[in-house]
Length: 488
Ligand SMILES: Nc1nc2c(ncn2[C@@H]2O[C@H](COP(=O)(O)OP(=O)(O)OP(=O)(O)O)[C@@H](O)[C@H]2O)c(=O)[nH]1
Ligand SMILES: [Mg+2]
Image (cartoon, rainbow, N blue to C red; front, side):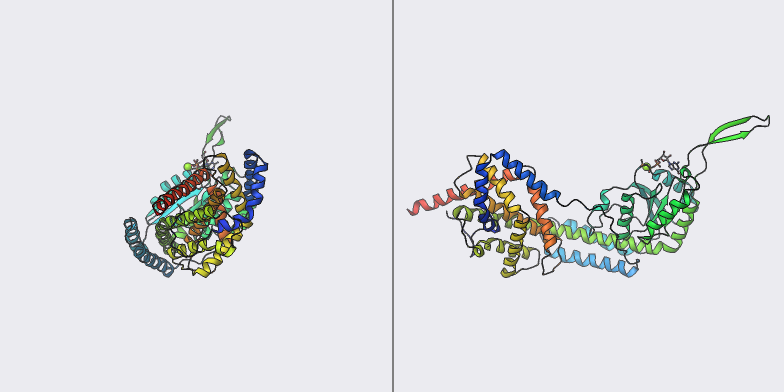
């Protein structure tokens, strides 16, 4: 084997070191069971691994964010500009510079937005609560009486807006100044979570209880009380009004002069006076604040978008590096499939990979730090059972393909490459969300590793990965033969 390695230390990867401990026992079990049985066991193992933590349904109280100020909005705009400046230096000569200059343009226009006088209002809520009816009636009855320039549209609330990452404000409601959240009575769990989400994003809302005509008069105070109590947990009990945007037809009985009774159906007029009053008050007192808050959110979005471009560019730089180390790990493991390699030496490839990746993400780890993180990742992979599961899976794939199942080294090679890749991709995702902190957040890293691992378990990724690694190794072998022939 004549594989050129530029780094001084190079035996194995995390993959290899951990894997070798486990390999013997795993190989036993593979030979004892048929491939299908093993797959079953693996699937069960994975199931246990990923089902263990069901999504918590507990209602979490949102952080109530400080009231908006002009200064806070200006700071957010300034941050977006400096972020863009910094990023455009780093990604200088890439195809992303056009996108970056568009973002810069957006950041510049935000400064003028601080003085905006017109407001945009959105009516939202789950399906069938009366959003369209309310929007129509506001447009036809209220808008014309108002001197301020306003825009009102309606948009159905989507469940997934609740779960999007807390850091990202990329929510389609972000650009609206005021939200009218429509419900038809006591809040459901999802509705409460939606309002909590809006609160934590700093988006002002009025909770509109619609279809009050369907409610019996003696039930009204109870529901109102309940809604107020719920809203008080997110400090919004003041933001509640009841309406009937499109009351149901009612039977009307009219006494005729001749003494007979004539029955007909009539639709009562919409009852939205409470809402109109609340809206007028809000616009009068809050317009500036609403505009500052929206502008701040928009600036935050520009910053996030700039960062995401940076992360794309960094990822494009990181992948070839991960692949390079992945092949080194494979080749080394293939050449030395001895289950007794020195543990410290075996971690070296991954330590160097971590150092290289940290440099791309401007976190510049020392080799010492790289070693430490390697140890952490190795421990996590072992604890999560990933080493065991992947070794079993890869062995089964190799065995089912007799052409590639070459000698003992193949399993070690493929596993070393695979775990090196998982470690590399996980770090890339970890660094992408990390601001220069020097301590590694184990919980976060662990979650990322699990998710990267489960992604690679899908879509035949492993099968094609095994083929890739093997053809890489065989290629290297051929090269080394060609190189060594003339020397003989
Ligand atoms: N009784 C009663 N029915 C109402 C009221 N407002 C709306 N509705 C009825 O509720 C149904 C849904 O109203 P829409 O305005 O279409 O509700 P929406 O939220 O836009 O519905 P989607 O767009 O399908 O999500 C219609 O049958 C309306 O007539 C109200 O105040 N009282
Ligand atoms: Mg509608």
